[in-house]
Length: 222
Image 1 (cartoon, rainbow, N blue to C red):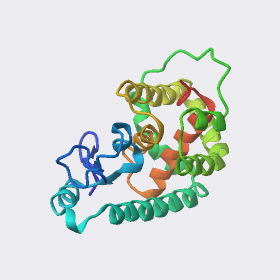
Image 2: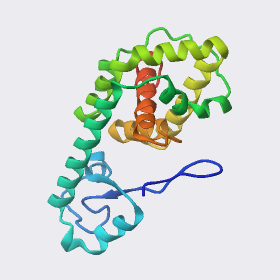
Image 3: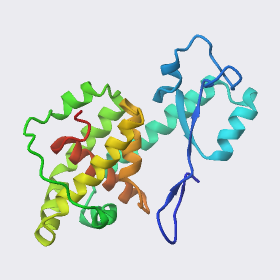
């Protein structure tokens, strides 16, 4: 289990970012030839529950680098395929569920920045990999539906669009302040977009909203 769905309060992420090649000399599968930044790069990280994180490090012989890398590659390919397929069926009910947290956000002043970068330039500027690029490209296919949803919500609540953006921007700047960037930052933002989601359709809707904001506001801009 990677997420504990709370009956009361906020869901808690129980998953952990495990190193494929160890972070320290005493860690499992440590590779002395790696640069420090490579060790914490998304390509050397695999998301696991706490129990399996312990197992792969304690029983190193059963979990060599090539086996973990293959496991990561296969899992990411399956998840990416499910997400890309899911974008085609994103609809208002899933979007409503994905933004349930927005009502507690305070709106921020309208941005005066009209010089936003197009998605492709943002992808290059943030050094996002082809995996992130595929998710963004697939997510853009649902931007019309997300845009219509945001407009409909704004009819009832004029501050809704700004509260939606402020929630994502606050999380984005928080993660940037902690040094996260590139694919790691994108994956953490995807996790943020899916908070409270109860099924795959709602999780996909959350990512569709993130991609929509990726295009129309300064998330990933700086």
